Each structure stands twice: as C-alpha cells, then as structure tokens.
Image (cartoon, rainbow, N blue to C red):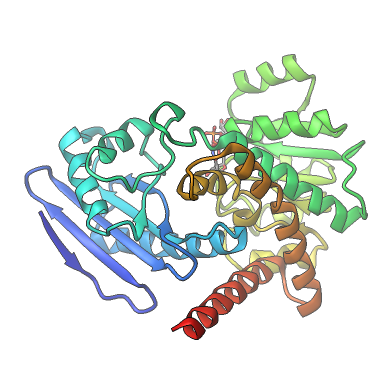
Length: 354
Ligand code: NAD
C-alpha cells in the first residue's frame, strides 16, 4: 500500500492511496479540524480522472467543515472518495480503505455517502475504529434519515417564524418534491402539525402509498414548481433551484433536505430578489450528521442528547436569518459567515491557550 501526500492550499491534509493488491485508488481530504476531528462520508464513483476525484473530495470536505461548524457538532470537515467501478466492490478493497482511514489516526472519521452502504463500512471497521454511522447492532447510531427529517421540521419552524411571525403549521401549504426516506417522514411530521401537504415524486408507487396512508394532495412532478404553496421543500436531488425553476416558484420560502439545491451560488440572490426566503440546505439538513456525530461524544451515542442538539437547528437557522438581515446579504452567505465566525473564534481561543 502506497500512501502519498498531495499539497493543497487551505487544506490540512490531502492524501492518495494506491494499493495494487486490492486495486484501491482513493483520496482522503481533511479540510479543517479546528472544531474537532474531521467527519465526512466516503463515496465511490467511476471518476474519469484523479483530478476530477480530487476536485470532488476537496469541495465536499470544505462543505463538511461549514456544515459541522453551523450545526455546532464539535467536528471538523473531511471526506473520502474511492475511484472505481461500483460493481467491482470487494472485501479486500474496503479492508485496504480501512487501513488508509486508520493511517489518519482518528483525525478523519468516515461514514456512508454515495454508493457506500453499511455493509461496506462494516468491512472498513475491521481495520479501523474511525467509522461512524454503523447499525445500532454494531454500536452505531443507525439510519440517519429520521433524524434529518426531524431537523428539517425544526428548521421549517424557524422559517415559518421568520416569514409569518409564528411557527404554527396549521393551514400552511407545504409542497415536497421527493418523498423518500427523509421527505416522506417530513411530510408526515408536517401533517401531524396541521399543515396541508402536497407531494410529488417520480416514483408513482411511493406517492400512491403515502396518499393512501395520509391523504396527502399529489401533483405531477413535471411543472410542480408552479404549484402555489407557502413553503417549497426540495427533498429529491441537487441543483433544482436554477434559472429555469426559480421564476416559476409561487412560494414564500424554500426549505428542504436535498443537498446542493442551488445550481450556482448566485441562485441564492435570485431567490432573495424574488422575496423568497431560502433555508440553506446544509444548515437545515444537518440532523443526520449531528446524530452520527454523537457517536463520538464522551460516553458514546445517546439518542436523547442527539435529539436535543438536532432541535437546535431551529436556533441555528434563526441566527442565519438574523445575520442575513443585519448584513443585508443572502442566507447562503449568512450561513458561511456564521461558520467562519465560529471557526475564527475557536482559532483565537486555541491560540490563547498555546
Ligand atoms: P431517498 O432516495 O430515500 O429519496 C429520494 C426521493 O426522491 C425518492 O422517493 C425518489 O423517487 C425521489 N426522486 C428522485 N429523483 C427525483 C426527481 N427527479 N423528481 C422527483 N422525485 C425524485 O433519499 P433521502 O435519503 O430521502 O434523501 C433525499 C435528499 O436529501 C438527497 O438529496 C440527500 O442527499 C439529502 N440528504 C439526506 C440525508 C439523510 O439522512 N438521508 C441527510 C442530508 C441530506
């Protein structure tokens, strides 16, 4: 196994692993550990080149620093990528990856991400203890989706308060695109609180199932952006807020669990110009990472403590909205500002202790 360093400005450590025996070719990037060890998922993709994989891992690792800083998890930001054909997974590959993760001595802690499942992580775990998000049976915190949904509920409360002055869901029309593990649960939580829930999904069977169970209104996925509602919750995939969709929106706020909702950063301004409040995705969808992060707390995972922290997504988002108002900036910029303020404060405190 050959581990080599890649120097990247602004990153604490970036390394490459090549292991001819298992065929592993992987990168791990640690962006920042000021607030704690770098937690971030492992993804596997058939990247066209190492440069493309490097671009992805750097971008994602930095994103994790900001996400964890705003969520106040006491964690830093990192990420790992395996370059390879996802149909050619093998135990040897994940054992080698485990040794690569272990070589960071706990400064990088891995978790699930795209094309990586709990069964893959169980193999990684045989070589390193720095794995999070395993099943409850294996001592982990289990499936993060219900926690992400609960965090989105808390975040949506902050959105309602900001726009309507009260977090009362009664009579609010909430439109969800994507009612999978997270969106489906969000829809239930909103309905329980008296909201009028409208759903769409490309999976017709899933829509029917939820309609039958909860009586949600359903609309076609195509053109759903134009459906009048109070809150629009993108919960399916990324880049759905863009030049084509934003002009069609007929809502007062966008608040959903999907990652990377803005096609480009400037789309936060486009939403603002239309008078639509945007809840930055990585702030509102942090429930999963907060839950996983609790595995690293002294004494181990504690669901009640995790829920207490997830509830605070309401306060974190309220802070973001307040900063946006104070500085006359969009909410994406305000979230970054909040993360940077927390990192700066922690760096200053650490410098004083030295
Ligand atoms: P999921 O796969 O369980 O659900 C996604 C749903 O979206 C599915 O029902 C699917 O049919 C639907 N969908 C996919 N493409 C669509 C399209 N083009 N139009 C309409 N519907 C479409 O995934 P999930 O775990 O619920 O995650 C949803 C989003 O939230 C993803 O962007 C994910 O990255 C993000 N997220 C999830 C978590 C988590 O804890 N699971 C945490 C943070 C962020």
